[in-house]
Image (cartoon, rainbow, N blue to C red):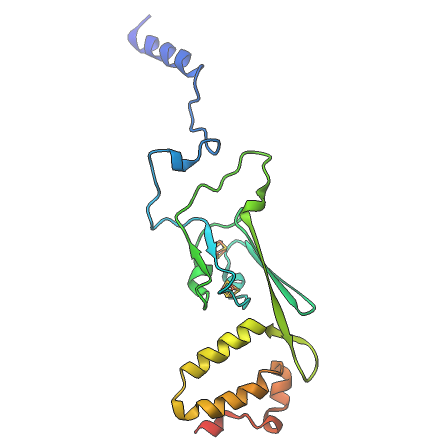
Length: 191
Ligand code: SF4
Ligand code: SF4
């Protein structure tokens, strides 16, 4: 038997009695010598306190991992990390910094395991238009936008804009358009 063949037979015998691939996910990556760097995009850190339910993350999600369902006056946001490709677009667009991507990449589950740990669900209340009654935007989002707009205005205009918003944020965009003069909230007031 030549040396090459002897080595091959030796390897074959050795590999018959030990795993030749990593026993992942039975042995998590964290137990292995390699740790992912901070720049690696992995499991989401979702802050439900910060999330206002605006849905911006869902509109840019590359893989359909984020879904939004409105039912009556409740909006449900769902994130399914088992279909996420960790592109980071949701993190980049979130106006409230409610989504971050950690460097945790060990998300694989042994076959047959419950995948619920990879699913996140969050509900927010929707406001409804005082004109037509239709659901409009999440209440948390309306308040966040209001605060953001006011904090960026010249102080001289804050009172006027605040009063305007007290009125028009109660209406949906369609009713607001049709009532724009009646409501007396035209931005010309600020000029
Ligand atoms: S606040 Fe951020 S996480 Fe919540 S729905 Fe909007 S974009 Fe998504
Ligand atoms: S990281 Fe990308 S694929 Fe994953 S939920 Fe966010 S936008 Fe969707």
